[in-house]
Length: 370
Image (cartoon, rainbow, N blue to C red; front, side, top):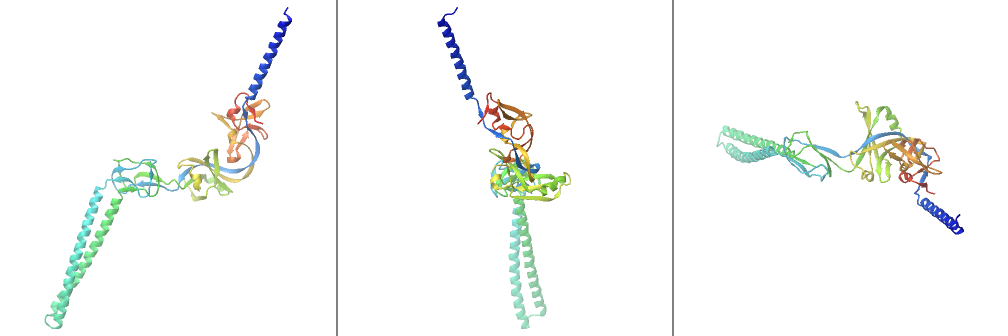
């Protein structure tokens, strides 16, 4: 039989262990993650037609060669910034240089011919004047006067012919200079090189693309609406374009919208062009995918904040707050309505509280923040 002193010691050890366990439990409870929650509610959201679109530069040009020859120099590459008038590529222009030199020589020869013809015309004028004076005094026959007048007319025709030849020579010089200009590909405006379609040493030919350049501003969203649903787009109260945002996505209104008046005969779609405001276009680049929403009206839909949605492979779920912590619940989502949230078709009901940080909600002991 244990002594009274031994029994007291055992009771003291028991209560000490219980106290330590209670402190440990209370400490673990105090360190449990506190996760903010939001209530699932019915909200008014825009309803309509949502389609995939593409962002496109309003100013985008494909520069092609206008003369045949080897590409001697390619001064830029994709991504380079260019200035209006900057030479981007040079095509072998030896033939055009020879043509320009020949045309200039022809112009010089034609101008010399004009000078010679004008000298002859002045001589013919002076001879005609003297002959007329002599004829008036009957010192020469009428035949001499007729010959002087014929010579004068021939000199005038010679000057006109020389001037016409000079005009033709100058036109040839301009054409040769223009042809030489075709061997220089220059930037039509300030922008960036989107792509290069040839390299130095490749053979260039008229109409064959060499470079594509674009201006970063302005940008537009281009969407092709099926012809069978074109009436829904035309009746929309507003049009919105989805753009990336530091907080996720944002739906913005275009500053101008243009609907082409005809449908594509192959795809049976109608093209809409939606110009973006400069402050919105700064966050995107041409070629980027986007979505366009034609909002016909407002309807009540069950929505949750986009940050509450957890995606793991094929699983889409939210953490729903319960009396004993969070429970993972699979959901089926509908359209994304921007700041209003994401529509939930199944999985939760109005009044449920969902975790705004699903990663922390999955930790052991996580509780809804009070």
